[in-house]
Length: 345
Image 1 (tube, rainbow, N blue to C red):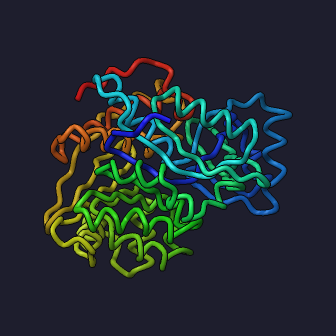
Image 2: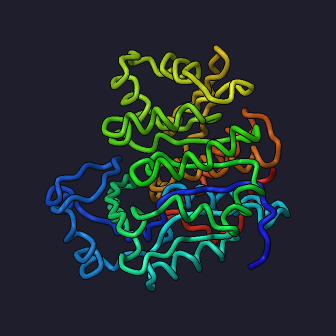
Image 3: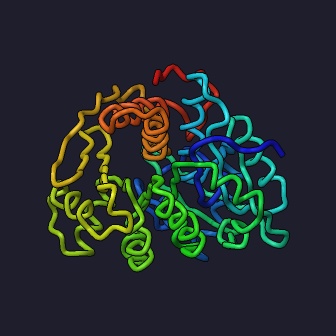
């Protein structure tokens, strides 16, 4: 395998999205709400087969972190910088796993998957209604990632080459120990570690894991519903700017770098807190008729932002790149990157 010489490494839960437009009846049948992400329970298991059998779904490479890495590389490649990104996760030794690997490779991402011989590749039901979406993730093999995968020579060569790391909070349900290997390397070498809080259920039910990861984070991303959940959980009030400032000021392993906290709010402004100050960056709203699917908007924002960091842009410029990437993605079905990238660094 060719040596990785890029700068961004992600680690997360690689999932094949099974995406379909559905009616309210399906949302009611499976007791799920739009604009939410959950882990599949027993009652949700039949939905995957139902989508395949009855809805002619799209199959799209997914998983929050993998999506962000793919978007970042899509932008870097368009700006003459191929081969800048790599990704760790666990898949099954099956056709869905092969499909994920082929898709990521086509987008220019070097994937170094751990292969689970006994468990199928994870899937995510993406239920789309009126441009909003609900995600039901069946992690399967993604849940079986082991820290030992990071101890191989190839894995070490990949993450030691990088200077920027990104892990979504969804991975906190899988292996905090694996996250700590990457995060401690980042701190020890004064590199940059980024974390996404990912979903209210992560904040509510995996609070200890979030607290562990947060101490390593130089950049923290989340959307307004996750920010509200964090504020409620930790009794920080309901003013998003205050919550952002308090997260920014919370304990940090690498005290040489002040933490940035970035809250996206859909089509309203993005909040950035850093070193006791808050700035807001306006979003140019997309006309409703051009909106296809909000699935992947947050992941794309992070991908655009990370491309800005790799290109040594200011935080403000990186936010604008995030807005551009999210604006592109919500005009596609899922995180599909088949169109040429027109975003300039």
